[in-house]
Every structure is written in structure tokens, then in C-alpha cells.
Image 1 (cartoon, rainbow, N blue to C red):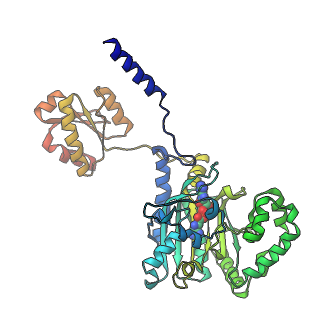
Image 2: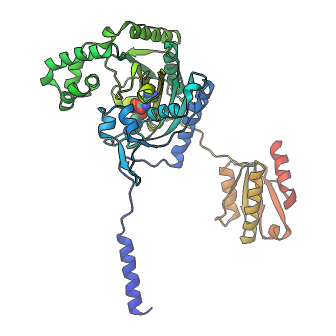
Image 3: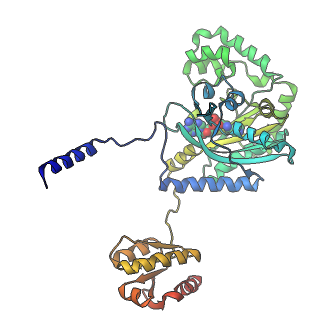
Length: 441
Ligand code: HAM
């Protein structure tokens, strides 16, 4: 090679070496095939149960107008103030990647005139949510939720049913040791007076509060109750409890919810500090926690009533309630507990080839088999018949279909019974029928 050309080649090589691989965006996570098996398992169990409870699936866009979350979730929430991925489109619209699913579903309920449909409307969903949070274990900037919402029924029995369904999903998935943490945060009638009481109490303790709580005192006093700072938790432990200050209607509603839960034998903990981080809630709020753990991270999922939200977003007065859980947290919890799915992929048939002509025949046969609902495995890149037969065993295949050079020329296939090792030659145009006959046995 001429010197100049060689030099140029070496330089290209050097330059290539220097390239730093593009990395994943901070706080995001790839979900690789082994984990997908658990994801599918969780989604299958949850969707099936929702179907049995009469829910239909809904999908809303990941991108919504930013205003939806300002009005829906609340402008003075951490979620909206600090955690949204928002940007202006080329057309000048301010949009955000959804940080949660409920607001978008309420928008869809209103926009699609669902209040005219026969109530209650029961919807379930799953998909990615985006929150610009500090990434840590169990907390990502893109996470996925499975959730469900019921519109048009204010009966406390519905609250109990939603809580029951949330609890039952975890049972079905195999997370048995959970506790429901529950509280009522009242309504627009009784909450203002309670907030005033709470503010008066906290103002007397202002020196003992963290910086965030000092701000919350004026911005969002309810959130003072669920601050995770040790010193603030101490102040919260003696704070007036909303449960003692509910109006008659909220009090009766909550009492009934608890009675229904007793009837369903759901174990719950009354947690007067549970207020949830989103502004739309009214009356019942709840979370499902793993037993023996405390703090937000251990909460697998949460939800509650939001009777004012449809109206706040421009719809009619429609009561609603819902719940969602973080799929990553459930996957992690299952993996931690050594949960094992039978991951062995089974293929009825394994296709074995020798040489290029045989490969061509195998490609066509593979297509023919899957069209006839026969699951087939192949290893087109492998050369030796022995190693391909080893793969057939790995896939638990009942039969191997072998095409060597002779068979390719004769338009025949060797059918090998993987258990007995018996082999028979059949014509290519008869092979699918013969395979189906043998698999039926
Ligand atoms: P949320 O409590 O904000 O409620 O989120 C629901 C669940 O999503 C949490 O319990 C947690 O498991 C998971 N999650 C939240 N943020 C993250 C994160 N950064 N990384 C990983 N997992 C996370 C809601 O979003 C409400 N929309 C629930 C609801 C439905 N209320 C009524 N209907």
C-alpha cells in the first residue's frame, strides 16, 4: 500500500477509536429482553384483572399541552414546578411530556364526550411517564405506570372497589405482603378551615422546619405533613389531623369506605399524614406499601378520589377515582424476592440446515410453518448439524426438520423425532401436514 494511503487509513482508525459512545439520557433505563418477560407478566396479569372488573383500555398521547398539568395537577406541586419536561413546539405551542396519566385521561373523557356514555366509565392504561427528578433507586426520569380510573360514581363502595382492585393486582402478581395506607383529605368545603388550622400550628414551629417546608407553609400547607425530613416528621406527628376536621359528608363517605374495606377483609392503616403530591385529590387518598417499609420509595402505587378535576378541566361535575403503580418498582420488587418465571422458550420444531441451498429452503419452510401456527426455531448462521441439534434440545423442540445438500436437491426434508432419534424422509410439499399430524399426537 502506498505510504500516503496507509497514513490516511491509520488516521481514520485513530479517529474512530477516539469516538465516545453516545450514552443513555440521565435517569432513563433500557428494558432488555430478560426483563421484558417480567414486564409482560405484570401487564398481562393487571390487564386481565381490569378486564374482569369491567375496565376498557385507553391510550392517550405522551405529549399534552402544558396547561393541562398546570390546571389539573396543580401549579404549586413539585411535579409541575420542578419536574416537567416542557418545550415549545415549532408551531409555538407549550407542551409537556406527561408526568402522570390521570390528567390526560380526564382530558380525553371530556374531549370525547364520555359523560354522555353510560356511567360509570371504567378505563385502564399503561405507558411511560416523565419526571425530571433526582435519579436514584426506584426513581427514574422516565418510568412506566399501569393505572385505572372510574368516572361517574361517587359511592364509597367504588372507593373500596378501586382499593380492592389495586390490592388484588399485587396479589395476583405475587406481591402478597402489602398494606393499604389510607386517609381522607376532605373537600373544598372542609379543607380550607383545616388548612388554616394546620398553618397556625406550623407557624408556631417554623424554626424547626426545613427550607422546603418553610416555603410549603405558604404555598401548599398539606404537603407539610408528608415531608421526609426527620425534624419535620417530628413536627408532623403532633399536627392536627384532618380526619377530626372533615365535614359531615366527607366523614360519612370515609366511614363507609372503611366499612366496605372491612367487608372485603383488606388490611389498611389509617395514615393521617398521607396527603399525596398532586393537587387534584378530594376525600379518599391511598397508597399500597410493601409491608415493613416506610417512605415514598417503598410505595408501589397510589391513588384517590378527584371529584373536582373533570370540572376544573372544563367538563361537567363528574366524580372520579383512580390508582396507578410504577412498573419499574414492581419489577425490581419481584427480582429482589427471587421471583422466577419459567423463561424457557419452547419451539415445537427446530429447523436444521447444511449449506446455502438448504438455507434458502429453510427460509421458505420457516414462513410456511408459522403461517400454519407451528412455532419454529432456526439458527441460520450455524454450520454444524450437531450444534443445531443441540439448539433444538435447548428449545425443547419435539421435532427437528433437517435439510442437507442432498435433501435440498431432492426437495425432501428429514423429520427427526428429538426424543427417540428416529428419522424419516418426507417430500417438502407434505412436510407441514406431517409435522402438524405428529404434533397433535
Ligand atoms: P403517583 O403516586 O405520583 O400517582 O405515581 C404512581 C406511582 O408511579 C408511584 O407510586 C410509583 O410507584 C411510580 N412512580 C412515580 N414516580 C416515579 C419515578 N420517578 N420513577 C419510578 N416510579 C415512579 C400518580 O401518578 C397518579 N396519577 C395516580 C392516580 C391515578 N391517582 C388517581 N388515579
